[in-house]
Length: 294
Image (cartoon, rainbow, N blue to C red; front, side):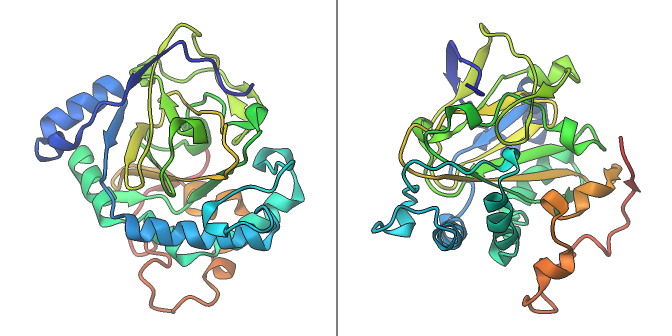
């Protein structure tokens, strides 16, 4: 299995009450390395993106024939995994990356407002927005334990916002984290199966935090936080978003501002969008410290 066995799992700690207490919110973030906010987001745009993504899944033959695409029931006896080089993944992902409403989710005012409290300054949402589709029957291809900073670089104060597109109980493959693991610093990375294709070693006896997600729930993770996806034990596709953010005054690595996977250009993604759409290239007028590598 790509997923590390979790002997002890505690429920996520709700940080909603701290949004009006910046000092306490930042202290919890420093201590735990994650912040969990139930029902932070309006579910209407989430459900809209979910429908659009599942329509693309159906177009690519990933939905079981004769079923309602909105149920997300995966085609039986098939698994498509992003890290294996399967050309079916690229074909799907190019279509999904063109969804305007998917990219708009990353700019949700409730997300940005929460991070402004955490950072104490303006927020830079990275434009490299990530969509995950985890098939059932894919225990060897769940997202393995890892730290996001390996992929992000730039500011160490970068945080990931993760949330599912729809309800995500544990058995569908929700996210789990190791509280306080960001304090260990950078860890050695090795190749692994699953989304991202890289993993770190984790203490099998360590304490994890996890649980069910309801549509609208959000978790923020420090870029050094160890986390992983749990196995999808259902017959449905698990859909989720990974969006990254940092204080706007900090340096940002140039590849955090390109499309995820870099298979398409922004011009290709924006084709057909209104020319004055505020989601397009929103960062280009900001005074950013853009660096290469590191």
